[in-house]
Image 1: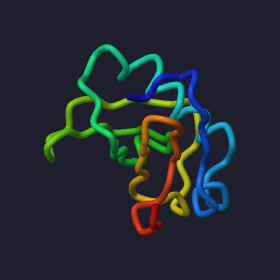
Image 2: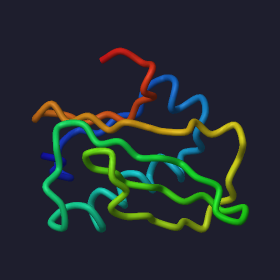
Image 3: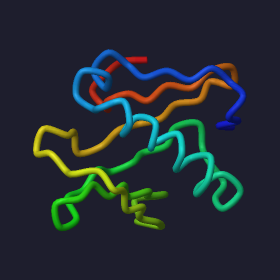
Length: 101
């Protein structure tokens, strides 16, 4: 799951609310921080949190926070609380929890 040589997309909702560099940061975290460290399910949930004005991503498994990733990006109250990342084995997509696959 989540091989970086598969097609990657962002949903309409994500593209409309998150800047491109933050979407790219999601893929960076998966490739460089999660892959090989955790057993990754088909759907990942990442929380977006304000950490002293900067964006931090929180990765949880089984409703337990297991890792947080600080970013250099400023946090915005317009950001969603969470994004999901889904891998169907052929392609991957970042989407908002309320969006249908």
